[in-house]
Length: 178
Ligand SMILES: *[C@@H]1O[C@H](CO)[C@@H](O)[C@H](O)[C@H]1NC(C)=O
Ligand SMILES: *[C@@H]1O[C@H](CO)[C@@H](O)[C@H](O)[C@H]1NC(C)=O
Ligand SMILES: *[C@@H]1O[C@H](CO)[C@@H](O)[C@H](O)[C@H]1NC(C)=O
Image (cartoon, rainbow, N blue to C red; front, side, top):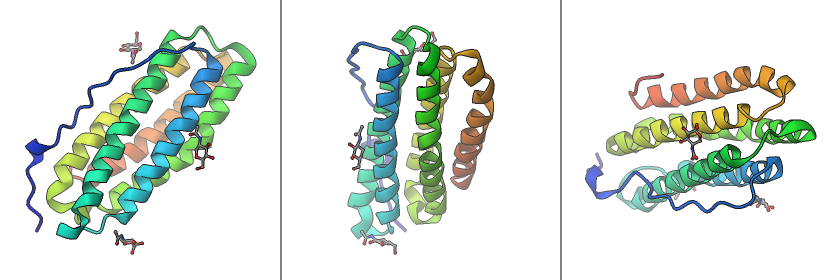
């Protein structure tokens, strides 16, 4: 059993977000960045095998989650500050999102599969999952608000799909799906 002080890690990132020119292209670029941070998180989760020698990986996973959270928040800021995406902006942003959806789901599945390995650190992971789900939902809403009608109409099914993956991971850590 691993004992670890949860209070010793600050879960909530203090974000300092810099605004650059915000438009569909900036949001699209930010989605690519988010995809890369997601891949990194997944790879570090897969490297965590528990026990004391695994602690650096657990801390790395925690840091990855905070970094990913910051990038998603940055995406929301960009989408918020952007005018309507129009076309082909909406199609480009939607394609970029669809392009990373599989990655996000894979990484959530990887997190879920490690629930028993994280053991005493589970509450920490659960906190990160809640935080990332909330920020992902906000990002989705900010994007949908700028979509053209066609993309707006297909967005709910993608959001539902992602929510299901988040909820599965959250339940694996004993949390409440929302
Ligand atoms: C994402 O990672 C790939 C592969 O490492 C790299 O080629 C690409 O430049 C990265 N993209 C961004 C936006 O960081
Ligand atoms: C953890 O286990 C995985 C799968 O067996 C392995 O690929 C990885 O190298 C291990 N991680 C470390 C840090 O040893
Ligand atoms: C984006 O806009 C929404 C709706 O106005 C707001 O609730 C949210 O705090 C904003 N988020 C960011 C990161 O700017």
